[in-house]
Image (cartoon, rainbow, N blue to C red; front, side, top):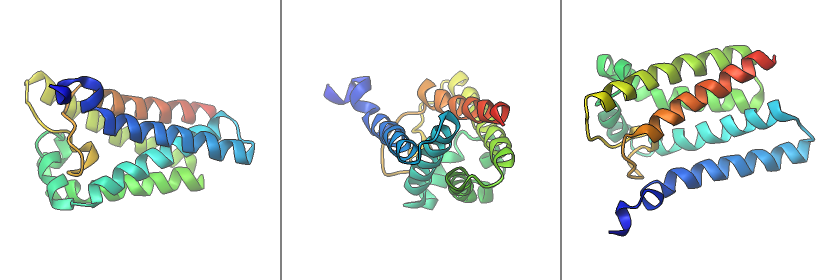
Length: 162
């Protein structure tokens, strides 16, 4: 029964988010940065962790991602390069490379992802979230949707802060 509790089921996701939050605070503190720097570091750590999990098993990730992502359903190539897109965004955030471009790409990628999740949830599909690759078992749920929307909103806030 223990594995049915939401906190147990979502612990890997919570642990990754908390580690990204704490790493971002540590780096921001060390550089005397403000809110924008913290958001950059958080997005960089978060996206790099999630990209890494997907890169452990690219085929397994692509198989799961194609079950619900609207772009991946149309292109297996997109399913395979998605982790590299996330990694590229992560490095863009951490290096502060072309911030406006990074924000816009993040918004587009995450909104498309959210649309696929909404569609899958509406259809009542009982799927595993590919967001954490095949290394960790997290169900596709409103948590996945919140993650996509949250990343979009954070990128949008940073875009307006420029």
